[in-house]
Image (cartoon, rainbow, N blue to C red):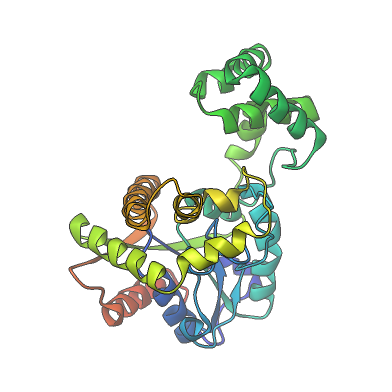
Length: 321
């Protein structure tokens, strides 16, 4: 597809899957074959200074392919799916305008869905005054009080949310207080709109989950060997607030405990491996909801030659190449 797509087609490729499954490598191979550019859809790779712990692609791994949405945010910032979509959509449209193929690579399913839908989001700013007031009330009064208030204005949202889901309770109240419209009404209004992009989904996974666990464990060991602890130290020197999203990322939270003396390095490594495996399981659970994904299953080792061939067949059948 070197001459490829017209911008009117608005076609993108999404390479998805759990952590450590090879999305970065396949994304680069597809970009080189189909005259594409990669747009990261990883909720932690957006932060500067988190390269090791988030397995952000190195210059060598990028292999000359343009990559976007990596290391674009200050680690003290808190990004939402809406913020990501606002930043990523103009980049994707620019790639299309240049006659190239956008290849979205990542495992943050909510963010990918937000971009593909592309209909805009209910109002609300992470740093807005209403958000700050609600966060203060959450700390002082607890989630149960806020959920009770939400039940009065948006009973459907309140019924859907678990009482411990503080983030979404706060978000639903924020939308109502800022706009006078419930988040339920907003979601209903956008649910039946056509997506912004025609997405071809390619998913990577292991046929045997034990092989994925083994690869994740080895990846964590490499992160530690290449300086994860030092990266965490550098992050902490920036005096970030304790609630900073970057500090909650897998690997950073655990190694912060090493630096403050609450756990040993060996304990932190095992905890990172456990949390990474749990995260991979959650990613797969989310992605299985998407029936449009064409899955490529690895055996014990990843075979990228075969994956590129299978992906080419998938894209050809979809009319992309």
